[in-house]
Length: 118
Length: 110
Image 1 (tube, rainbow over the protein chains, first blue to last red):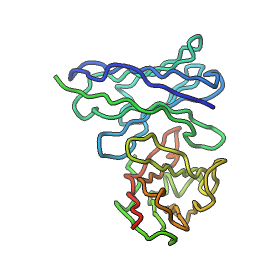
Image 2: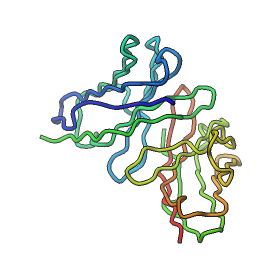
Image 3: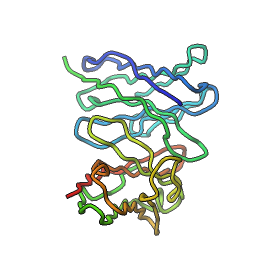
Image 4: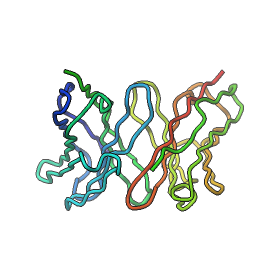
């Protein structure tokens, strides 16, 4: 069974950079695509982007200029950096495995709340 | 890239059937059979219920079924049960390796 766990600061100051890591167990990070999604409190889901183990990435056009994703094969982890954050970036951030055969996100982390506030 | 349109809420009694619509455009739902539906219970992560419009992952009840016509996809839940009460989100491939979600629909089992 694939399991994902997000980690990172729960509070980030405005204009700074949000950094999160997703640790994967039960699957090799070299075998699949891996994604980040977010959900502002009480609101809907938003796809942020996904990364392949080779480093190839694709991002939501609305966030592309602020998003950087990376993968660490040796640690079976992948990471998200979102720069120049504002209060609008306050959300529960999820990492998920993207199933390219199904065109769907089939395994999700539990999510981590990141608040942007001074 | 605009969010897909879903009704804010739907409701039904136990044993009944309900349908949730998801309207996109010819650039997303209308162009690709790559629509998925996710169920989210309060405080939990989303769960994949339907993928590629009509397919179900192993372990998902056959009471959940998907369909699509033109720019609108639909999720039907038959034989409603109390445990089906949750938020449901549609998601479509939107071209150029990007994805777009709907705003979500709250299903209430009366």
